[in-house]
Length: 248
Image (tube, rainbow, N blue to C red; front, side, top):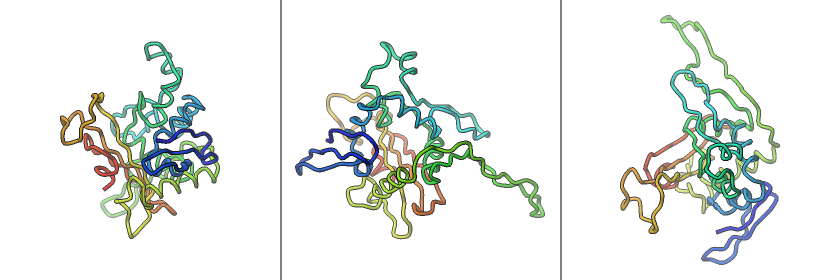
């Protein structure tokens, strides 16, 4: 359990665990999923900067895939809570938002757009199904070039920090997806466990829970990390934990 956090990478905060005291920065917090680091960061900055950056990466809006119905999901800000939440916005809502809980609602396609943008260092592309159309003789009738929709205003240093952290999740001891590392290429990724039902007073193991009350297991990734070619998003519905049930 960590306490504290502020600007990405510039501060280090103390982490208390069964082995004593340790120092946690942004990279380590992502590597080991230290929720409290992000709670503290959100407590200092509030919900609106988090929502603003999330929306730039494509959260809270349809991705315009064009071949199927999409839902926009929810990237809540203070105005959203003032409108939809009884009692309006309170500061604690930022803490839930910082770790993807509360009213945050995303689709696998949105995470694919987001992680592709991280791998592309800020270039956000519209997802497309068809690369080209060919005639029966193999001649190209029409081709569809990539469509960049916007660019995220972040520095090279900030992207390096995030990518290094995502690499450490999979490739360094202590990372929540360390068991998923590959000897052939470097995967950058992040595990996630999405709560589905309200927890009781006793935390049950997955096998002890009704199937539809079990958490969703997530793994979002791209590879090779140093020159990305593929983004892979895994959503294991009611699967349990991201590290053990989605990443493998």
